[in-house]
Length: 237
Picture 1 (cartoon, helix red, strand yellow):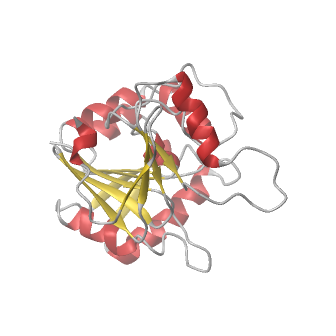
Picture 2 (picture 1 turned 90 degrees about the vertical axis):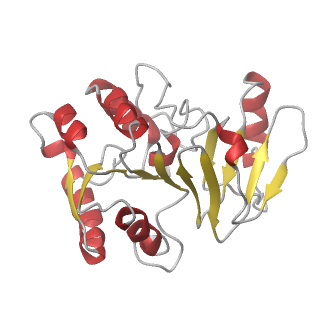
Picture 3 (picture 1 turned 135 degrees about the vertical axis):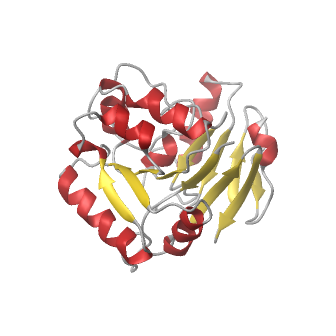
């Protein structure tokens, strides 16, 4: 039975790192009697993996959990197989996918998550739970073997979803980018997951949680807004 915590973003303006979802993270891990978390830092680009580990580990320590990054492991696949829980940090999704594929960890993490090991991700870490990375907001600064991801959920997430069109900006809005994606991928559903929001998956049940509504996009249909606490389990079928 899958146990997933898919968070849109790590930090809101004016808040400490992983500030707004701290209690959510604690409740999620406590509910599964987790003490030790394996961290995946590969989305970090302008921060070293060591520094990224330290930054996240300090937060998790405050919450009562031990966290160690997979990049220290001599056998990363074995570390995934033995993990009590897995946390995948945000950053650049292309770099994250490239490293997961290169080390053979994409499939290993998928199998662990499908077997019920608690999996959490924020931003890029939520993106890779989807079938592909195609709805990321990131630049392709590196080239993975493929865009395929873990397929832990059968729809796409667009993290940090924004409705705004900044004044003076002549480029496409986030909505227009998603509509382009849908024109080329007509059978796929995209969830615009706004900041300070997350999806909690337990088996075949999924609830939208957090402070903001979710915007759901389907090809050639009007988008639909869903309020926090809405049961979105239909998206898993």
